[in-house]
Length: 182
Image (cartoon, rainbow, N blue to C red):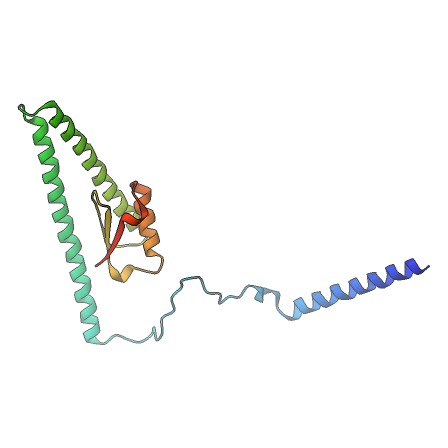
C-alpha cells in the first residue's frame, strides 16, 4: 500500500510542476524567448542617423564620390593599356623569326600566364560587384593581389568577403591580398 501512495504523490507533484511551467509560459509570452532586438556580431548602430547634412558636407561627399569614380575610370584605362602592351610584347616575341625556340616557348608561357591573370582579375571584379561593391579594381602581380574599393562601401566583414572572392578565383596565399580604400 505504501508503494501506491508514493506513486500517487509523485504523479501529483509532476502534474503540479507541469501546470506551473505551462502557466509561466503562458503569462511570460513564450515568443520572447528569442529576443527580437538581438544584435548580430559586428552590426553597426549609427547615432543620430536622422540628422540632415549641411550643404558643405553634401558638397564634400559629392566631390569625394566623383573623385573616386574618376579614379576607377582612369585606373581601368591605364590597366587596359598596360595589359595590351604586355600582350603585344609577348606576341611580338612569338612572331619574330630570329627568336630562339626557348624564347618563343617562354613567351608563350608568359602569354598564357598573363591571360590567366587578366581573366582572374575580371572574375574577381564581377564577384565583388555581385556581392554589393559598386566599383572595384583588382590587380594581380607576382607579389600578390591588390583590390581597390570605395571606402564608403567597406563594412566590418568586407575584408573577408573580398579575400574570399580573390581566393575563389585565383590561387594565392591569404596574406598576399591587399585591400586599398579609395
